[in-house]
Length: 112
Length: 109
Picture 1 (spheres, rainbow over the protein chains, first blue to last red):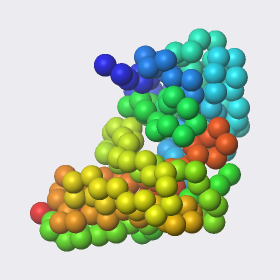
Picture 2 (picture 1 turned 45 degrees about the vertical axis):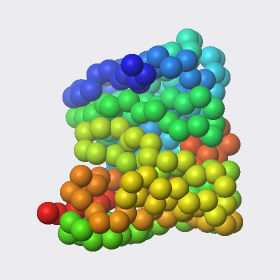
Picture 3 (picture 1 turned 30 degrees about the vertical axis):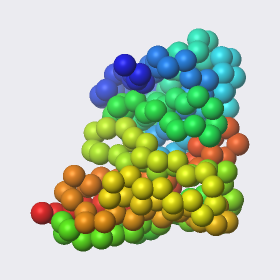
Picture 4 (picture 1 turned 60 degrees about the vertical axis):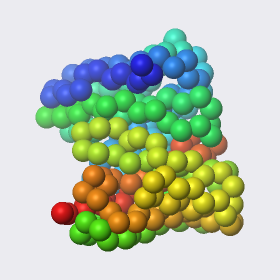
């Protein structure tokens, strides 16, 4: 089954404790993205990747890091999480720039 | 970033009513996509419109892409409670895909 898998689905943690949210896709897609979704602000792109070792900043990259060492994986790293990073996060992938996104089921992060 | 403005932000209607939601931009898009998102899940693609003036139908949902490719609309005929959700439009901007803030639709029996 074609899917984008994120882990964990839920995480409650404390300020400053490094965390990684994993994302894996099994569709051999070139493009992968991370979004955060907040009430009233919609889906905002954090980072995206056009291929292995090629990444670029989205609209809200501050406080986040990503890596794309393999085509299927695109982890999101919060080196020193802060409460303003409490949000619902989505990973997505697609074939090319004009193709539709396939989304994961989301990761709800709470930073205390 | 090419902005997409969606209206209305919220819509609450009764089963059987018709409705239209809008997605507007000052920029030209090569294509626009519509997604629906249900609580606790990721957005799921409904349709992609590519050609200016294009109309696509998906059962009771009709999607239209403006002639100038700057706007799009989604019309739902005889809405049902199962149509409840967040409707998002999205358009490519360089290598990125930008989303509008969405229209939250509630259809009550």
